[in-house]
Length: 74
Image 1 (cartoon, rainbow, N blue to C red):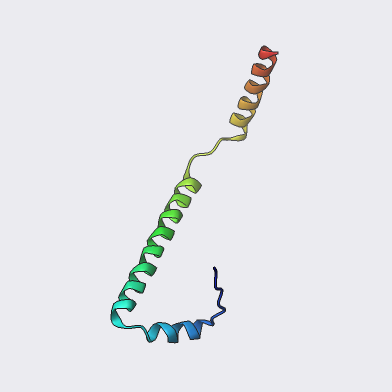
Image 2: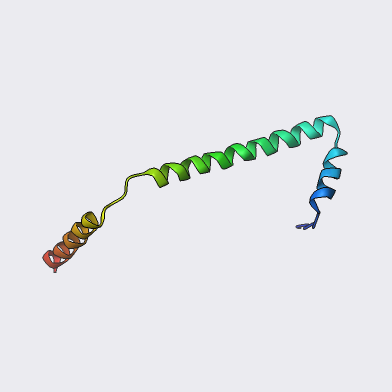
């Protein structure tokens, strides 16, 4: 069973402010863990975006090699 609620941000803040200290700390730690996961994916994204890429000349050589291999296999 799923329950979907449409809660305004201000309402959410009011609900969170009513939490006991122990529940607030647990919620806070969960939110912080989520932030760490997001930063890891952005680290991966930055790594991939900064990785070396093929030039057009290299892509043409690969394409030519594929054509030659396919002719050889036929």
